[in-house]
Length: 127
Image (cartoon, rainbow, N blue to C red; front, top):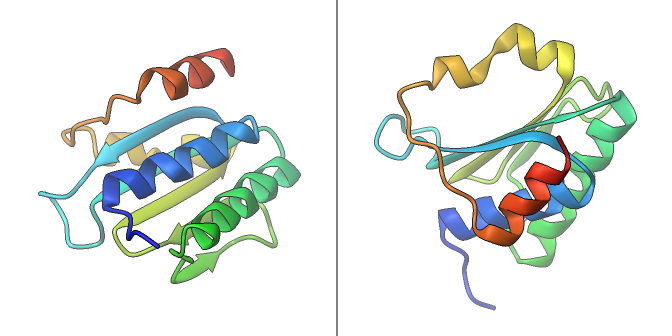
């Protein structure tokens, strides 16, 4: 099995999240700014169940690619789930929680990754 690089892993997580109808998905390149990882994938679910479903889909996609997350936090409550796969950190939020923590503002100077066309179209369709 080929080892995924950080961007490939971030796009894999993106695809899994979008397949579960994640909203407002953004991928942020933090590789030159922090040691916590190289990419952040941030998205929203409309309900706690959708947040859980998105997180489980991301976990399953990573596991299928041989990149099982190191840790998963918040899955039971479904308000903010964090999946840490080392070089990629995935945040799946319920909308009010995402607005409160506003991670995009925290990383406003970090470059956004432009999604490849099939994913970009899928992300736009969810809005």
